[in-house]
Length: 168
Image (tube, rainbow, N blue to C red; front, top):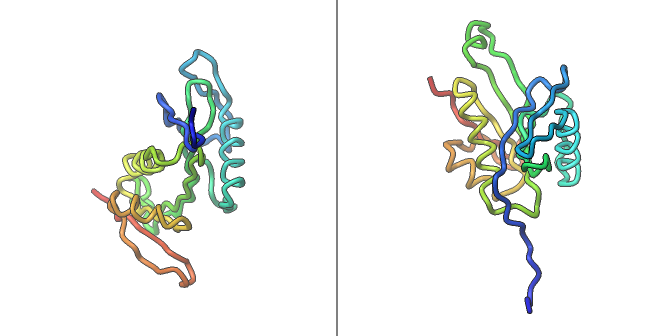
């Protein structure tokens, strides 16, 4: 007999799927079980997850990626906004500023899923300055481990912000 309920689910075989461009042109995502899901459905699930967690998606943020299982259930994801650099040539080579928000289903926290999502963003955008406004203090450790530095404090106009400089 178990004295305490299981607080977290152990999930395996999750994959990160790209949602880039879904807001302009719907496309299907192949699932490991052989089915497909439309990106707009996955984006809607991700938006609900943000809403349920109390994190508001800003009007300039769009779905970037989602963490799904073989059935297409969403366990987390990223939304991003882009600021173009003044030099268009720099943008052509991946420059600019990306600001992101991340959410993970509370039932699967503690499995480094947020770190996996952020790391995927970093790998695909090495030449961009990547920024995160931090609401959850636990996120500070994750960001520091991924090479982000604190650039403003809680109470400032921007709030608590971490940035990761571009790598060439």
